[in-house]
Length: 400
Image (cartoon, rainbow, N blue to C red; front, side, top):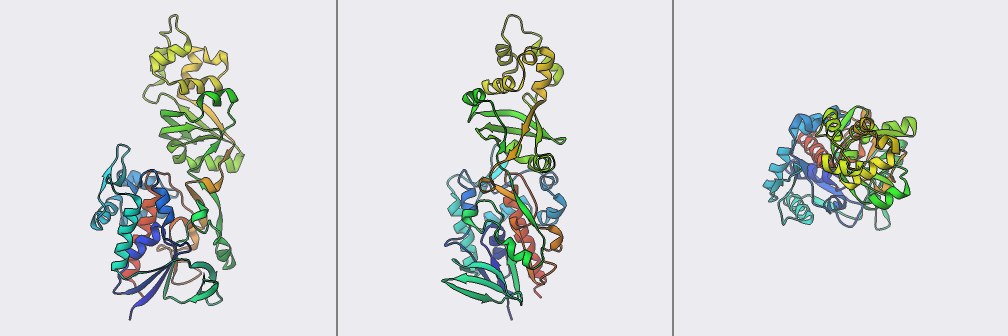
């Protein structure tokens, strides 16, 4: 006799889980709060659906915090495995210039979602929308609101994939935490990740640089260095380089209420080479010198001028050093509702090696609900897909 599986939520982790479960062993039902599934997946695809990254596996795994928690699931279902699975359901992918992986040109996010939903339909997965999870009763059965009624759902296996606290208009926004706390399951408070960071800019600098990019730079925080780019905003900074350093920036903010990061405006050059370039000033202004000898943009130069004193900017020795290590002071993170992702959620020691809740047998938690972190670039989606695939394999091989 088939076992019943209730999946709460219809994000990437839930969809991959349902798609890979053996329909000969399980009757599978997804319960989704909204009127349509996977809204976060569609939002993630607004600028092009970055499904994963082509990075070599060892480096890929190191992008996660903590890497050890997600390593087993990502090794079991890698970025290559994900591409192969998408190809199997009719979604071809390609590696972009940034080494990120996208659906081929012409395939829109809705096409990707429809291909996944078609796979679920072929496996007789039921998808019930407008069903809102409200917690458990005293028998650990699911309570779900639908059409002004509260339903009690009994299932042999339960998988909760309710998402984190980002983009809360399209999910529970982390308000599921209360029900877990009532079961004495530890929930780490949510914080934004892959978000904007606050810097108190001078008004004259913003007038010149707001909305402009700092390209071909590297950023360092707590000894970790990432190459990438940043955009200057009225609030502060945002971009791939700062996203990748979110754990270190957040740690400093939590401990000291401030975070210090350093920008290398010319990572391709050594300090000695920059000094040599600046020694050829002649009759040129320092601004012209930086343009001619180092090909720094006006935004790079404006940043130097707003951080340095006039004396520092006109000292070849100090200027060279600051080009390689320009300090910025971050005073806060942006609002959690605007963050691309969040960190926090179910404490990792509350689940076993297969994401089963230690305090509620046969109930599992996957996806952004758990307290892990990753930068943008396909890593977030890959982790969710991998967790879903990893748990599906576990349940397929151990259905009881």
